[in-house]
Image 1 (spheres, helix red, strand yellow):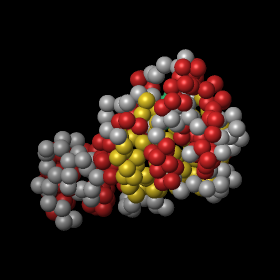
Image 2: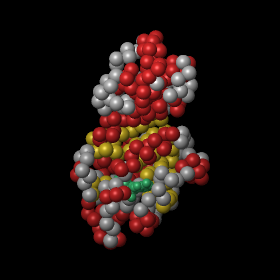
Image 3: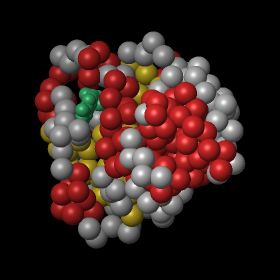
Length: 299
Ligand code: SAM
């Protein structure tokens, strides 16, 4: 709280201060930018704690809003870079963060930003970097896939997202929540749902339930595959029509003329062709991908 940051006057994450700042700057929320600001100290503390920061670590925040989380990060990390798309928030952030000399605000769309360059410019002297954010829900998946696919040298990604999306990211094989998003996230990370978050901690309140998820980056991917692109295309194809069997979904991928060979291939690696995609582990998808490549099926 105020004591921790030593700046009693500018702690923004209270309903009163948030409303004051909004009134002072004449700010109006844009639903289309996923603007739901956090007003709860406990949730902010939980997010920051989960990120395991210290003065040797960097924090990249996506969507700082009026700086509620940014202030906490500034007090916990060595350096903070926050990327905000809404130009109306930039002067507010400048004021709110005026004392935080370790913090930089970039005005831009995180999806268009060269993050590798940001890491080089800002974080090369840090012992590790984590992404910490209350994400705009309309672009959660593209943002997270960008962070993972660009192979940024991240330690953790601790983010507030829609609960339903968090459940899909952390899902184990066998349930209806398990799908290509689960496989993609778990390929790169170990997921952990930190907490479920009530609507009441936001202004304005979102229509969906929220959760904080922590994704800890693996040193190397969860499974060893000869061709990543092929692996993810096999995964996509296996979940293409969820009520169909693995055999039916993969027939579309390898071509009808290969139906019999596909049955033999799956049986040969110990996978019942009548199973559904949602029952296969990351390792089983890797076996399918490997066997298909050996058979010359690139899909
Ligand atoms: N961090 C603040 C908080 O917790 O109170 C605000 C979080 S709010 C859920 C999401 C923020 O992301 C908004 O400030 C919004 O303007 C910003 N935003 C939306 N799309 C963005 C994008 N593509 N790139 C960067 N920021 C974005």
